[in-house]
Length: 215
Ligand code: BG6
Ligand code: MG
Image 1 (cartoon, rainbow, N blue to C red):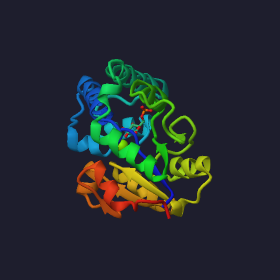
Image 2 (cartoon, rainbow, N blue to C red; image 1 turned 180 degrees about the horizontal axis):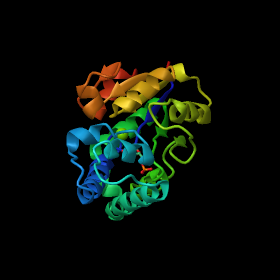
Image 3 (cartoon, helix red, strand yellow; image 1 turned 120 degrees about the vertical axis):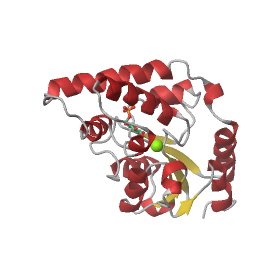
Image 4 (tube, helix red, strand yellow; image 1 turned 90 degrees about the vertical axis):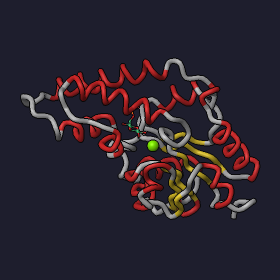
């Protein structure tokens, strides 16, 4: 391995909880049942694809494209409200120390996230200039489980997929890594489901998986 490509929401920061709370507000307003288990299906999935998954339980009148667009915009407004107060203090010591140790060992570090809010979140966390490459929802056509976001990250780094370890909390993300020819190390829900080549109890386990020097 020469590089580590990190998913953002639920891996670098706990914004996955903010996504959940924003979708929950929207689902409640439409009388759609929605809980944390249902939310796991949305991990890694784009904004509009997430809405489509939530609407599977919708029993109201058919929604037009314009109405659906308004719904995702509303969700994003609620979500962005909760991002406003994020600061570098929201970066956990474990995440910060793991990133710094991997960089010290000589690994290239990238982000591979479906989120269009990635630049804003990285700035809020004080990581705006930290990563060697950022591939996110703004530079892809297809979101996870399509491998595009990770392939672009590898391209930006100038590396082959086999040189990259992907870190994910989403089943869709682990699937994306695998279909892109990459190894997946998982945390959270994806780890609990055994989706990774490595299923970690926390992010610092990366320091046991990856050798002291890139190979
Ligand atoms: C992923 C999240 O990182 O980004 C998904 O896991 C989210 O839950 C997706 O839907 C898109 O995010 P955004 O910020 O562009 O709405
Ligand atoms: Mg995630």
